[in-house]
Length: 189
Image (cartoon, rainbow, N blue to C red; front, top):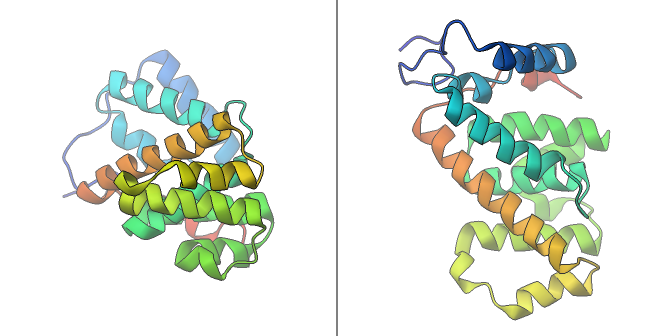
């Protein structure tokens, strides 16, 4: 296994990358100071990379009743339950950066229940945790609890989809020993 690759699998990136993919990677490098390894991991198959980035960008960046920070908090809580090293590192850094609170990022990684959260955030994260741990046990009372703290049905859809997306990506990252970029470890501390 070469650690030049972002996973334990021998699936090198397409070389050369298509112009549109290279442009996307250049934008990542410019904005983030790196190309996230999750993108490099998918770049052995450009169609898979495009599908992954389209879904990620829609869930995490498109208009939503959830803030970017709230979506990152969901990513971290799901990843904490699943023990996904890649996502805890990458999205923990995002929570630290977006919140301006390194302690909140660490609490999210270790145990979100110790964080000083408002009722809305607590309800959202409790629901994301239940999606992760026992989705078949979700019932109307769980959805109503979210409505009671101010979430719309569209917001509930977004919470469920963000939680489900990270459950999927956590499993892929863990199964392939995907490693986070070193840069994430020192961000926003």
